[in-house]
Length: 214
Image (cartoon, rainbow, N blue to C red; front, side, top):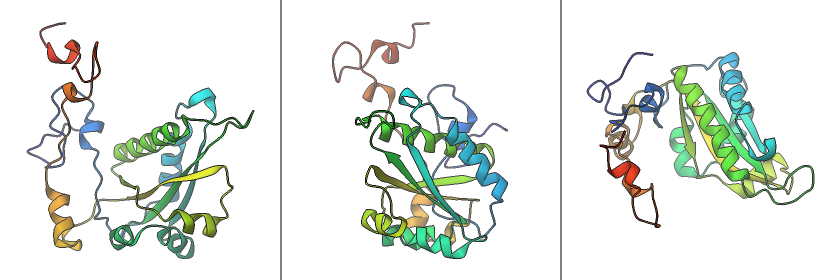
């Protein structure tokens, strides 16, 4: 994968430390091209999710997936489970998914507090696999949980987590003015010393503040 710089793409991460270009390139667009994502490509994304680590190897994640080009009716069902604000732009994505997690361990029915973490890790793996394939993923918290339970008859011990829009990058001009601005503005993140602590909560770890140490 060719190196990216912020000068080449306003969305490329201007990282403070040397990281893989895969992480620098990934971002969450709302503009998707009207271009089919081949079924084999979708399977590759889900295969990456499949091999994600999880607590006790429980693998609590589940996904519903629909392709607009291959099964429009199934696609509309997933689209209807998003809040209206997300439907407005996600309807252009060629693939929609919905992620879920199982709230209890299969072996003993005890609560699995790590399940939300694990489905998040699986969706991250799916997302970075997409990035490596020049595809883009936008994950959405704005979902209609009641609609999801009713539409898909979801078992009681499963919780809907997020919607995912997947596809090739589209033209920002297809979006509303406010969404266009967000689509083209540089990304930013907290610095390491804002979330990496040492001896005391809230006190930055010397590891991230003293860059003179090897």
